[in-house]
Amino acid sequence: MHYTLRLTQIGDSVGVILPKEVLARLKLEKGDAVFLAESPDGFHILGYDPGFERQMSEAEEIMKRRRNVLRELAK
Image: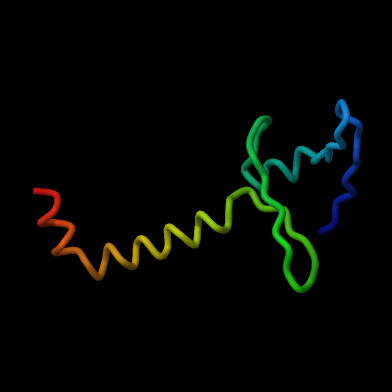
């Protein structure tokens, strides 16, 4: 499915208008941040920060491996 996005003047900047259906599928509301990610096949608009997601995955892996150490530190 493809959507046509419109650009509009916002002060000295330019904004993108996202249709309601797109906002719903991205689980976004007015005021939320979106992230533009570049990939080999173009750009993607994401409703989450892919860098943060990667950091959290690495943190979860460390917490699994070091569970005993973290349990001792929590005492």
